[in-house]
Length: 203
Image (tube, rainbow, N blue to C red; front, side, top):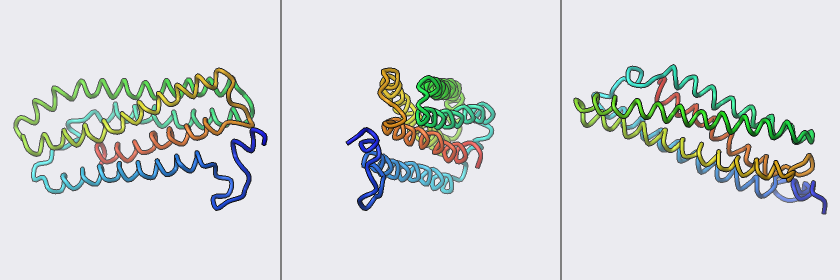
């Protein structure tokens, strides 16, 4: 059995040529989608119940977060280019694109940390006048964005481990399944942020 067969075994079986590792990642991501969907649905439910829900556009730095969103979504493309590079057996391009992906993800977290720092004082001042609806908004905001930030952090650790293996020459055009699976997780982390961003900052 060669490396190609190990990475993407035959076309036999119910799932065709879908490797079990990739299948398990899809199952995990499906459960994660339900988790994010539940949190977002809970946010809108509480928002509808509140008689004095604050205007998020006045509290949140929409412009800064929009720019930060561009950084994160850009990392999805660099991740795809990393996978494409290894398919062409271009090790240097793969490592370069992985490094850019990790840099953009880290930049996203740093900017979000700066936003948190700015919001702590603003929220405490603003919500003292509206203890119920105000703190409810703050709680749901930090819960949703924090839950996503945790995923970004896990993704960065994941990509860091993948990068170490890539630097050691583990992946090639015939064997890149681990990189491909990591890419699935990173794409999910990137694009689920669009739903969080639209819910909290735009709608």
